[in-house]
Length: 352
Ligand SMILES: [Zn+2]
Image (cartoon, rainbow, N blue to C red; front, side, top):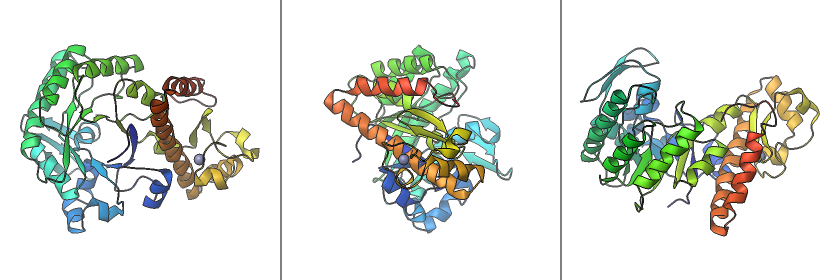
């Protein structure tokens, strides 16, 4: 059991970049995500299974959710060919040819031994013609049924994925089709791929309406900015994952209660204060902004770890505060504070 709403740090290559399992526990992580596409190309799911499964391989004893590999196949791999049976693609690593279908995606996740597996879906650009978005959605529904049929282990939960781009009717139809199947949880895919914030919110409204009364956990895939958490939780979302907190940390951008700071900015070279005075992470207890500003300028490896420790801790702490705010009725106040500080873009803004 994990407390929700919750954010899952992303361990793409059997590691949340720059962080040890001990760092993740200290940051308060309950569950992390592993990427099937990457792990199956290297070191391969069969090798991880021989070495005792993904938990043991990466020394993470908490729950792990694995994705199906579909997102990376459709966003990262080269030379894709999709048919109803599955998708053929070439590896972005070495150009070798691979085949992924719903049954193989379930087999790989069974070999990895994750606690939650995802059904294979077909992601498309929501800006494509409606017929193409609808075609991918229908295929996703057929693959969802095959994924359930292929589930291999009774100790592994399986989530289905709603697609349908930003078209309200397609999203409604997809929510109905996926929720009609006996999945353990319902995911919403195909968002945070270039659509506007308003389109994301409107799509989540449609899905929330279509899933009304459904008690299963709801997971919004690939979303993880401070403002998006509030937009989505208001619309019934329980789980999130995103590379954003660790990816931006490695560029020197840290998230604080006052908004974003870019530690590469000259002003921080003489700042003796912590990254965020309200944060209790190892970085904020021990190090100054000036020290971090120096590490980033010197390109010292410690910069990546320390900034990642802070951003993951701050993000997971934000979710803990969000859960407390839901319980005590102060959700709107916390939401308004975060929106104000992350819209003000105190320093060197990046888009959410
Ligand atoms: Zn901190």
